[in-house]
Length: 139
Image 1: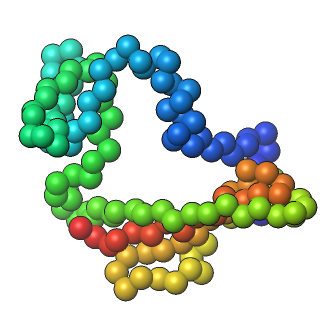
Image 2: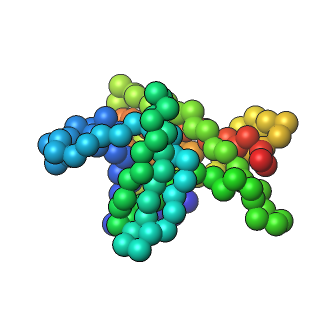
Image 3: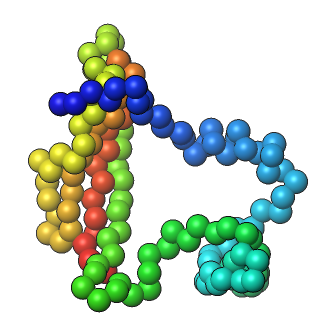
């Protein structure tokens, strides 16, 4: 195993992230919708989305990060859908080395189609974050 050196693993929970940003975002309009298209525009991007009631909205932004998988994989490529199942392990006394990380452990049960592996991250000496990501196989 290798040392993390001066690096440390940091985890940011989505609830804490949202609470921290809420004061800065309160003046903005919140839109909950499904993205149908992201298109380049003259000064950024235009996002077309549809709300649950069917209303279509077009939003403009300088920058857009589109994390949706491509509709069709390029030739000789596949798209994997990852799912994460994780838990925290707490101990009564420090038992984990905070500078040790276990990544890509393939000793997990393997699905019929796809791939499964585990990893363990060291948030503290008496706590571990463990997760088992798995893919649903090619789309």
